[in-house]
Image 1 (tube, rainbow, N blue to C red):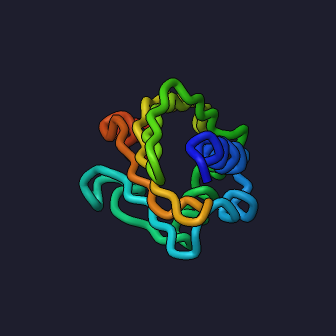
Image 2 (cartoon, helix red, strand yellow):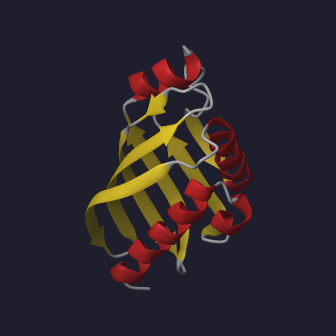
Image 3 (spheres, rainbow, N blue to C red):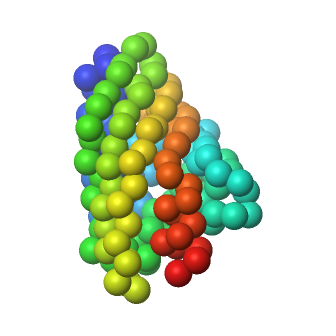
Length: 134
């Protein structure tokens, strides 16, 4: 696949992720997919590395906390070969009324047209203040 197709796969994945549709979102992932989220393990519910099943649980957790969906807007891309670096801004209103608005940097690695690896970098203090310390 070319870089344009890889970018579209990411957009399609996040469209289903944002809607809380884990079943459809997971179809864009390789069987051995992993998602590594930065932060101190134990401080944040999403820190560490998840397998494909864990990613499905993450999508369900986000949908539960943000029932109207988490908007993820791309603001920058760099792509080369099987890797795509992408900047996104998120926005969502939690069930408790708090607003989640976080910048992200993702690094995606592809294998045979599917997302194999996701590395996620974000403002972990914001995540903690909105989701953990609420």
